[in-house]
Image (cartoon, rainbow, N blue to C red; front, side):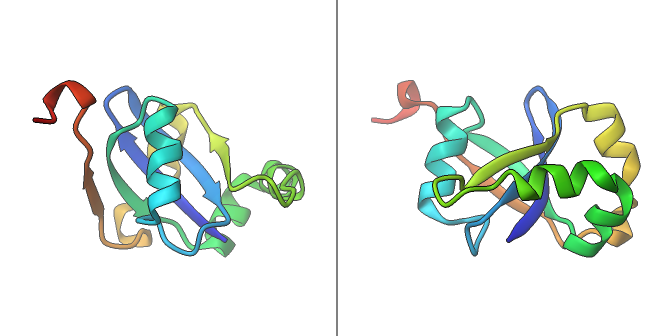
Length: 104
């Protein structure tokens, strides 16, 4: 299980995913299909996310089924961005996904 803050064109969002990597091709495709083809991701330690989100974290985590591989933990960008200090997050991962119209 991974938790990450994605900095997207429309603002920060915090996700939980059962993929073992934030660079897993299936995850990248799922995000692109949800309108997030390009982002910066900062992995959040699960224990820290649980501490900050409390019962909401457990509710979202317990909502996972075998068919779920991506859940939004926080879509309020202002709250998500201010809930964590940069020194609490892993080094950023940048994914430069280009819209189909840019492909040659």
